[in-house]
Length: 418
Ligand code: UDP
Image (cartoon, rainbow, N blue to C red; front, side, top):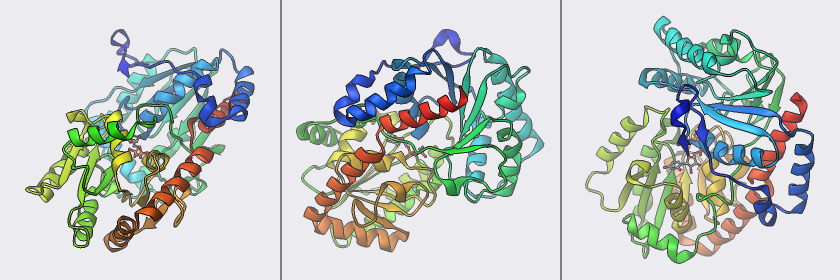
């Protein structure tokens, strides 16, 4: 993905082409037919998706597949990114954390800065859209700041666990959100009780044909892992996540240390993308470096070192067990990505994780270092059981969390707004 140089004002994201037909084998004839049927009434609809970064994190992952597929079925879809600087993204990350329940204070300067970026972005928008879908808090005020809203319908898409928001964060955001025609959340329990906008629920999904998720031969996965410094003859524990406090990477190190008392040869790989809209990540990365200094069997890997979609794909395949030690999680796309590869997981009882990972069938849900460690040890000691769980996980993702289901849900929403 690249941002078009001559359109910096609106930061349009350039995308690969994708065709729905390529998904027929994996998703089935019925899913393809339903999508074509829904899309037939929407041909030519102009849809703009707005987010805050073109790389890193689940939203970017979703839009990189969804927008090309919308285009393939006849929607005139574009994706654009709100431009921001360090100060803007520091504030919007605090707002994100506030929605997830961490106390926040908002100064007049924060408010002004936020509104200034949103107003600049609103001015740069052309008014020829039928539907504008705005993701998360960063660009949420755009709708209220438009001089002329035209005839477009506006959707606010929240990917965050906003079930128990800090009141300061939610009071700040709520008036902006209430200017929208619809608000979309991942789970019913995330919808704040006082929100006065028609709500729809849509769960994210993975693209089984992307370089992150497509089939890889075993030799290539192992060679890729070995190139990153992993000894493929020894067991590997993996977490793939932004370096974010809610994903608890420091807790993963504690789990690894505890499990190593039973399985001394266990390696740990912590893979963390540095998303452009997440200034907290470097601080956490440095804390991790301090915590594991001198530990040869713990690898910290980032997209800055060239650990990108293919490498994540390979690591999710060679890992003996993957963890997702989230304490709060909007959805946790990485859970479906991992289960799709048949790798058993131990993951937090948080947000969208239990919807994807059926406890005791595709892996285990856990809370706290002791429970995580005991579950990881048990999966390492019973590899046949771990493989069975991997098969179950793959089946569940095929049934519920493929991009074709998401495309169907989005087309239903667009039909409603026509
Ligand atoms: N991701 C990645 N490289 C990393 C860390 C994360 O490609 O080093 C991807 C991960 O594979 C997934 C997305 O970023 O596609 C994270 O989405 P998720 O919903 O799990 O969490 P979010 O970051 O949106 O909170």
